[in-house]
Length: 112
Image 1 (spheres, one colour):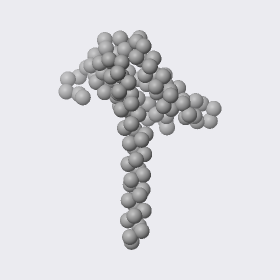
Image 2 (spheres, helix red, strand yellow; image 1 turned 90 degrees about the horizontal axis):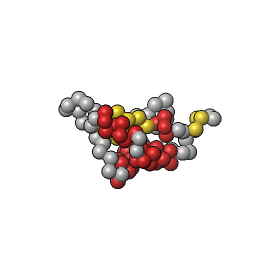
Image 3 (tube, helix red, strand yellow; image 1 turned 180 degrees about the vertical axis):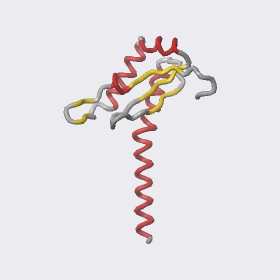
């Protein structure tokens, strides 16, 4: 029984470590990049789609989203996302940061 508890504890610890490494740390890295570039954003969320990593950057308004989309900070964000996941591929398809990043305004009060 003791070994079963140890094995379950190890599996839970590995699962928690994987979650932090694959979900929390990449989001924090992107939030830091955006903050360093002076971008006024609300938050960055993870959104895996069909086994590909994805990120949603939320803004306070549609105007802020449009302004960011044409900025150098947006290019830096895409470059960072591509760098973080450059080794990913499924068959002959390679990871493309332009498909993994989406920008959304948050216009409803109370969300956040």
